[in-house]
Length: 309
Image 1 (tube, rainbow, N blue to C red):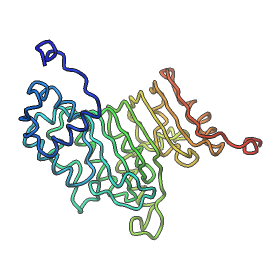
Image 2 (spheres, rainbow, N blue to C red; image 1 turned 45 degrees about the vertical axis):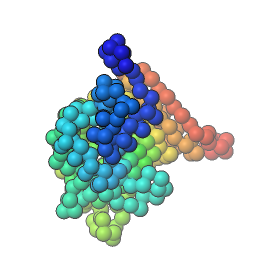
Image 3 (cartoon, rainbow, N blue to C red; image 1 turned 90 degrees about the horizontal axis):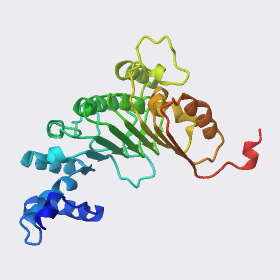
């Protein structure tokens, strides 16, 4: 690599970055001394390699913590953490994430090392996170927000399942949030008589009081005389990928956040007419003058007999 090239490091293909990531995870010192790798090139590529970190198990988290303790500079390069709670190809939510657990079981995420070392973290992505325990979700929201609320601007949920108010509370826990992506997520009611919710009504009421007391103000038909003021939102980009808005529309995101959204993307199955009604009657009227881009994707239009009323 010439002096001219070293002054302007090239952009590296994603496949190349992923290959070097696997090497560095196993033995970060050996690759730096490889005769086929220029020292300057290696120094230039390292920030790209550690820009996005996937943590899919407690063991992976432990290894990453050791890397941060051994080389603190890595903490300044990480921009996104991708947390995989369960097997990403599961079609049912019958698993408990290893790194997203209830108090008393030991908190694996975010732990103590990550909040201290990740100084430039910008984005959090949660995949296959399943929580029907109100106590566990409240504990996790507090732990994650206290660690990263000051820096995180982007929050993504992929194939996640939570109880009522979970996604609303999580998004509101990050006051500087600019981007929110809800991709194939859903809310599930707590059932009476289950070990996770002996008294679901009381559990949800306690969760709302402790974590998101202003929740009624997040709904389209919210109570304007609520005791608590609604915090100001700054979301400018919102993506919703959901098969059915009928039950989950007002449980997934705050309608007041739509007033600052500049880019709105909605994807749904279109198998029923109700989702389209929810979009036109509940979502779009709440959008403010800031809206500049609207992308609506319908997988399949309803049958003609379903449209006729």
